[in-house]
Image 1 (tube, rainbow, N blue to C red):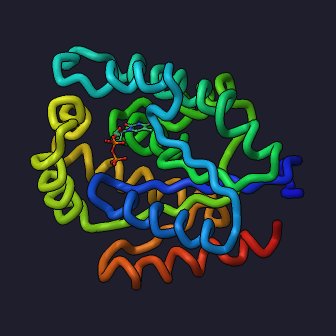
Image 2: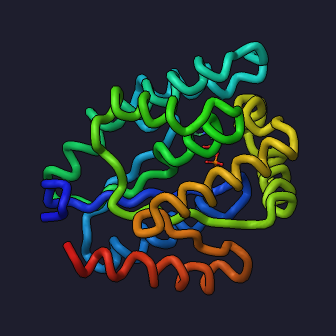
Image 3: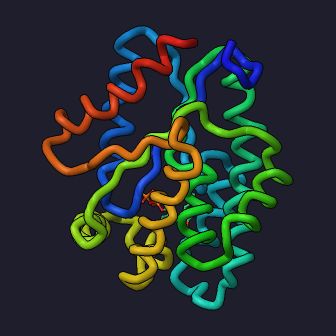
Length: 220
Ligand code: TYD
C-alpha cells in the first residue's frame, strides 16, 4: 500500500514537445509487462470517450480565440473523467497506471507557458482531482529547439496533423517557458518529479528512466 492509501502505483511521463516522452513511455510499459505486471495506460487530454471529444476541441486549429482559462478547465475536465473511469479504479485494483501527461503538463503549459500561474492550476487540480497525484513523474528534458525540430518532423508525417496543430503552433518563447515550468516543479517537488535527459540512444535513455522507476516499484 503506498502512502496515498491504494495498492496500485501511479506513474506519469512529462516533457516538452519532441522530448522522446512517448517512446520512453512505451519502452517502460513493455518492460513492466514483460515482468508480469498489469499496466493501465492513460493519455491526456483524451483516453476516455468524453476526453477524446474534449481533446478535439482543444487541438482544433480553428480555435485560435480559445482563452487560456478555457484551455485550463478543459484539460481538467478531461482529467477528472480519466480519474473517475480509468485511474482511480486501476489504482484500487492494485494495477500500475502510466499516464502520458498529467497535472504537471497544465502547470508547465498553462501555468507557466500561458502565464496563468501555478496557484490557479493547483486550485483547479484540487477541485477536479482532490489529492490525486502521481507517485513518480518522469520528466524528459531536451534542448527546446531540438525537441521542436523532432516534433515538427513527426507531425508532418502524421494523419492527425490538422488536429494536432493548435497547441504545437506556439512561439519558441512559449516552449522555453514550458521547459522552465517543468524545472520549477522539479525544484518544488524533487522527490516526485525527476528530470531525465532525453539526449542519446533510446535504449540508453530507457536505462536512465529505469534507474528512477525501479526503487519506486520496490517500495510497493
Ligand atoms: P499530444 O499530441 O498529446 O502531444 P505530446 O505527444 O507532446 O504529448 O498533444 C498534447 C498537447 O497538449 C501538447 O502540446 C501539450 C499540451 N497540453 C497542455 O497544454 N496542457 C495539459 O494539461 C496537457 C495534458 C497537454
